[in-house]
Image 1 (cartoon, helix red, strand yellow):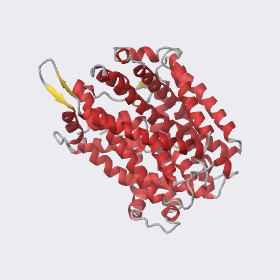
Image 2: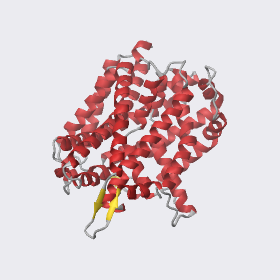
Image 3: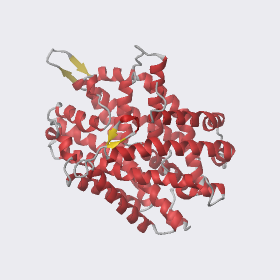
Image 4: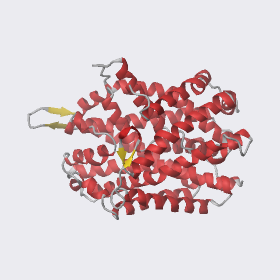
Length: 469
């Protein structure tokens, strides 16, 4: 394979920002604050940070090391690692490529929703977005969601088409610092908010911050605490972009002289910081104007609750709303770019075709599937049964198949491969090939061999409804 075709990061900063960009996505913006508000605020934060430094660290380390060691994308990395093209472990690479292939279309559909709301607030029509039924009316239209999805996908494709250095690395160096500045700015503004209700009771952003930060142990039992741990584990698992082929892909572009241990620590820090600040942005603002009941989960928090909050701010609402959705758009874009690159890189490595053709091929397929996802709310409005007795749309079905079935299987298998088949020394040897000191080596070995696979298996069984607590 022509290494020039694959490309590589020029420096560790580009790699860290790109990998952090893949981790900092929509899940950090809407899911992290919701779970923190639900699970006792500071209690959830403490549990999350502990898991990030242990569980998340092990998965990050394994996948990035596999990528750099093999210099291959996920589709071919596992076979390369085993030196057996037709080994059973090679099928793990196929699964790792299928995941981003399935995620990209529906992620672009959601990215299109974010783009729509950014345009609405930017053009001064934020009041319309806050009206009851606006979001439902938007996604039920067969044309507009498709147009916004296509624009979002094209933006991702252009970055990927430009290559690893000129496209992914350079865009990350621009988008990630801007994203961080916007997150900090909106978070600070959120703390300055205050609102007096019809009963004369004034609520401030600091009151909302206390709800977010101060651990609430009231009514906490062993069972409920275990629920907090599982929520934090689930958020961490999906937040860090593990088991999606992304980190293996980005790891394959890292030069051999890069200090991987230092880079992994920085990625952990970036992801946790933005997730934390997302809570500082959202929880105080929603609490001031809507109380704890306003902390709805999932997309409704972004597309229904927050537009009402921005409208409540008066004339500044459109400006703050536009800035907020610009920030969310950047977060969605950096993640979508990494998802697309995982597939494009796999096509390049496996079939030896050019980046141009691989990008056009995958983008075309994603566009078709993305249209089907958008039609799932109008022309193809069907109810799909999901495990546990729930039901969902086409988007929900794709999300469930990837996040709750394929990704846990990949993560468990990767831990078994690194911990028991290859042995941890293969991974730690890659980390310390330049003489680096691996202070958390003992922790890594314990996590990858024992704790991580057991925790992920348990999480998978809980999500399937096989284990109930």
